[in-house]
Length: 512
Image (cartoon, rainbow, N blue to C red; front, side):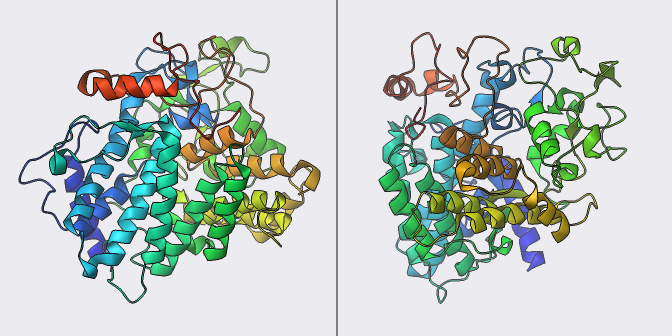
């Protein structure tokens, strides 16, 4: 199985090098490209290409992490700037896998011997579109990826709420169509074709989708979540949707260790949260290096008491004047604040988590608290979600070992963590925020949905009128390559001509 997996990963790397594109409006129709490639390899490529956000994007907005240096090309969400360098990366990361999946699904349409593969591809495609909607709002959906098949080079943007309704149907139908007695999908990089785990993952994804409606339409949220829960969600961390890496293919999301690492620091709200609760996950996440620009030679100091988060709304110069700033402020070509742990969570061989048992348990804890799961025990689910999050850390490199049951018990008993019904929503969703440091897109999405934790806005300037980034703008290339659809989508989203609200307009489920 390992040999087959390595062959698949090698093919995926080749596909990534030869089949990349810039957006939804273009389609590579090279006869030597992917059009006739077996759908299983297309599927595997779409799995390894899926993004969970970026360290300079969603992780910065959710105040996990930031680039402290305002140097033009690096100016982005940490300085409340609309930087197209970051917008276009997301668009391309989503657009490529979508086109491949559309092509792959077309290639096996009507083939009863590929039913499980088709169902898995539908679920994965739905996950990608859910991420895309959560990031941008209205996006190409019904016509996306159909340039080669239908010569649609300028796809329309569909309404984000309508897309979500379609995604619910897609995930539900595809999950029900999975058959343990059907075709074996050996090219599956996540579950090696395990049907039960795919069904649990799909239902857990439906829990996430249903919870997005919690402020918009609680009745709809309750219906979807209870249906998914009854169908069977993730039970243990063995059900996690997680992608592993090896020497053949590394975690490109973590390539910042070799790209001016002196720029990158963990933000103060996260470090303060870890310290407040004496969180045993801290050592995997962050540390201090002797030289912030040379981070791969010596493992960091991970002592929690020594950590200091970079303040939100400041840069490497202005932070030096703050009370409590390190003295001297500069250190080895950088500044003296906590950085990512490049030997563990941010290592090139660190796994990438997409949908997890921890996320699912914590969302279900909120659903149980709201009465959406009859008989559900919110406290038990909350504590199970915390333990599941801590259990993920055994999968990281670095040699830090597992978080012991005794440390988990002590954490859960801490007065700042211990469950109480009066403060349940804050506790549950703050834990969800911490549990998604390794999935910043989901952490940012749930922060927008729930309003927790109670983060203070980034006031570096007044570009956001004192608020938060609520969506990532469309890349400016769309204004030239797909202008009619682009401007229609902007109008439908309520974006002003002067772009003054381009980052503060909300996706449909993000009710004030």
